[in-house]
Image (spheres, rainbow, N blue to C red):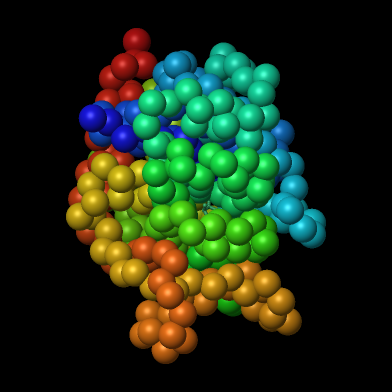
Length: 315
Ligand code: BDR
Ligand code: CA
């Protein structure tokens, strides 16, 4: 039976691939897509989710907009990585996939209540919507199978030396999710940086030859240039689809059960995920934390997803 999933995202180049993998893979039943402010403002990430669904032929999944700002503090955007639109690179026409009239929390609530069994939440942006859901509807916790999120790091950050973008964008929300008592899997930079989108990967996607493959190549080319410019990386890490890849192939990412705390007050470290890999704090483990990935197997999944959706939409 396919795993029922709600994807909460802030597209974002890598979020776009998370959407495509979740929609394409038969092991996932994508029930809904919700958006949050993150890589760009909420209006842009929402437009981008509808753009991705349109070009990838994803017409049967509701898309709803969520929070435009974090629970505390001011929103930050990742213009330097994702561009002014949040999805710079290819040209997109007007999306034909509509916006669901419900807000994200209401859509997630409705989907959780309507589904016969528990549902997996996959957040690939700041955790504002998910925390808002847990605060507004604590009674729904039993309907959440688990939360598999992209965020944090066992080591350094990418937005500050200590903090990763999704977590530092809304640390209080991340703290609520990680302290919720729900099963949480955290796939962070320490994993995604081990699976870069190399030139060989780009060539494989380009060789698919469909209009969707062309868009994907242009997305990865822009993303790669940004990572080269900002971080000096030879190839960009495609963080977000690792969450979906873990769901469809649990062997793909190595996990350890560990205590994870979100730094809320540090002068220089707010938003850091403090992962106690050595058990030195004596705190109970509250998350499964990714520590390694089979990169070739991951890229096979991504390329297959672009092939599948490209074949459906071509011509
Ligand atoms: C995360 O931040 C965003 O820029 C990406 O979409 C990803 O979710 C990586 O730090
Ligand atoms: Ca993201």
